[in-house]
Length: 238
Image (cartoon, rainbow, N blue to C red; front, side):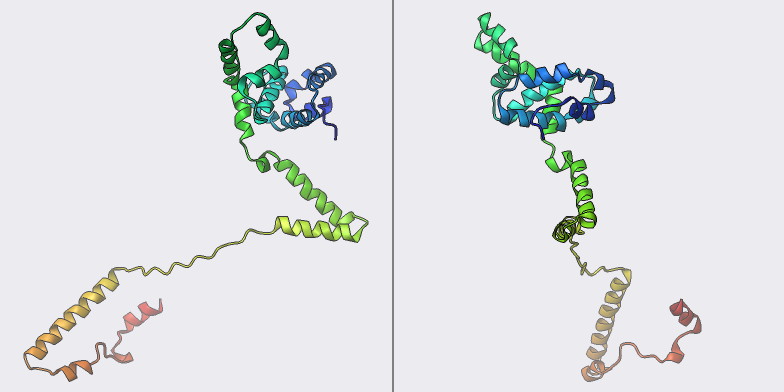
């Protein structure tokens, strides 16, 4: 893949309304201003990757290309003034020739740094790479699926299938058990009834009406099936 921008590549990512602005002359001039091969590749990728910001405002294509160049230099660690000078070498040289003070130069570069288009691209640069390249991720999956079925080499088929299984596996689910005891009114009623029963039994023992052994062996609930009312039984079934 070429490290330089091409007319077709740029036209493919910019809004339809700007495609006629992508001329061969513009692309040639843009490429000719970049001498460093490493930066040329990074710049090309950024022009393609940040093109979605063009849909968020009405900007000229030339302004977009300049703003991406400035942001690309910033991402490489350049300060505002250095990035500004590299982005607009002719403009910077005119300021030097005019004897512009260093303070004023920093002011000009700071003003450009706060440009709406520049700040929008800077914000886009903070977006995770996997989100920006979601479409490429899907294309890679589609190509692996194609190789899995159509590749002439069985090894390529097997490797493609293994890669798909690895990347498309369902996320692991953690099962959490809720073991909290949820109390309702019936539990409170039972507790109150138990306390009242204990109190009553203590009074009976204190009054000599029953002994402790009798209380210990007594049944709290004693009934037979015949004691259950038929209507209550129907309620239980329902």
